[in-house]
Amino acid sequence: MSRYLSSRLSSLESYTPGEQPADNAEYIKLNTNESPYPPSPGVLAALGSGEVSRLNLYPNPDGAKLIAKLAETYDVKPENVIISNGSDELLAFAFLAFFESGVMFPDITYGFYPVYGNLYAIPYTEIPLKDDLTVTVNDYLGVNKNIVLANPNAPTGIALPLRDIEKIIKTNPDNLVLIDEAYVDFGAESAIPLTKKYDNLLVIHTYSKARSLAGARLSYAIASKPIIDDLKTIKYSFNPYNVNRLTQTAGLAALEDAGYYKEKQREIINTREYTSVQLRKLGFEVTDSKANFLFAKNPAIPGRELYLKLKENGILVRHWNKPRIEDYLRITIGTKEQMEALMKVMNETIRGEGV
Ligand SMILES: *Cc1c(COP(=O)(O)O)cnc(C)c1O
Image 1 (tube, rainbow, N blue to C red):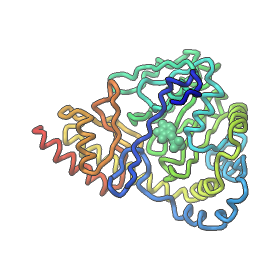
Image 2: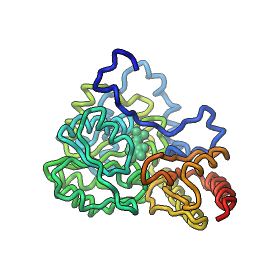
Image 3: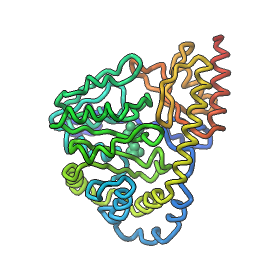
């Protein structure tokens, strides 16, 4: 820490991203929920066209072309859409714009929510999940507080049905409800259609998980016009050119290749169900995930020990030293072959432990 750091920030605990090993080839990387599949052929072709030669020019700050296509895709108006440099940035904008009076979210959820709370000195309340790691919907009904929910939740993968999400939005009409749908394309119901009915709903999507573009940094939010306008005010007060030319081009081409992504999403769902069955056969407790990862623990071995065993064998997964979940691992769904390699090490480790 330098002598110049603002005292308000001296005890800030920053977000810890999943490990990104220098030599990716060394590991089967199942720790940051990336897609194991490359971007679609249309995306690669679009990036190979003329856009690179226009990098001397600033990108369109509004992302007008991409926004028009997103609006068409989700059957909303362009004025209801904003794009951003990854959903982490959109979350940062939303916390800054809307949550001065406080916000609530589950105790076990995406690790960035408390980080932004602390960064902006926003009072936040962490609402415990039930023992089975599901959200207690009643905890959020008519509470007159701003609310953030990841749906499906991370790292549990468990999704709330849309009717529960709607109850939460409807019973808190004077507060903003932010639904982070990073994983929605792997089997949950999107709340986007509800943005036409409720002016207090903000839905955030990312290209990082279901559209194979984590490295491009692209996300979008859909909400009523006044909410989107507020987010634009923050964006234009911070970094108007936050989505670069190549990323806007890739994002547009990805929407035009919807069939490719649907197929890959189906493959990931099938591989998830296969892996879940295999893990259960080995005595794992596995949550009912609707995301591109599984959250699992085995009563025969502590989470950290299993995490290290997998790492020794060239497989990276995510583990948190955090109460209630320290025995769980979050395992990204890779290709079928990668999951077979995972199960081989799991078999050796668990059977070798004398279960
Ligand atoms: C991965 C993830 C994000 C961040 O996505 P980016 O668009 O890559 O910044 C946001 N929310 C949740 C719940 C996530 O899992």
